[in-house]
Length: 306
Image (tube, rainbow, N blue to C red; front, top):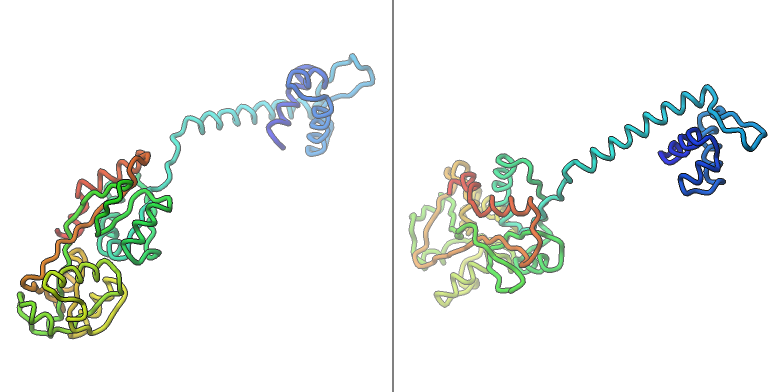
């Protein structure tokens, strides 16, 4: 039974006729009459006394009087509910994030953990794994409805705004069984068995750029294996006599120290910055503004002992 039917019944009883109720509500007499019949059919009894005289007003039966009171109560509660809903603050959609795999694994997990602990009202949704290169992340920001992206290569697109949030250089981690010093030369590095990542990922782009400064390329190093993802590099180095590059935020001192050491390669420096990317001119919801302020504040860095 619909609320409109209850309103029709109340108008019939108050006005005493179907025609008057129809006029008051701006409905046809057939609509009002059909509604009354439908109500009586649903409740299983007559609700008004029908007489042959056209001028005789309709009056409720005993059951109709009961129904009239309940109908008033139901409509009163329904109106309260509508008012309450209209006054309630509307729930904003989650802040939509997109990221390549490396920032998601090494950075966002800890950042979002800190965010939800300090401000549980901000909801986020994160797309990870559907993009394998930073270029794809940039393209996704332009073509899909995401609010922010986390990237490690700055963009010059005038339609996008890139804000630096963290210096997260690539570091060389070595299995302790290799017995290398804390600092080695480039020539010594080229002799080590290196775990590589998949082509065109941010780590390989950074490594290629570092080697290029010395007139070298990926072909000049000694590859041991190729794996997918930063976590796979850590695991391969941890359990094999190997070395590999990972972001500084990926190194977990309490877990990795017994098996892995950080080694500096003289002359092989890498400045890797993580950026927060967003569309220029996009309307910022209150949740988006809170999220951006939290990220730029750096309050989450305690998760990484940076």
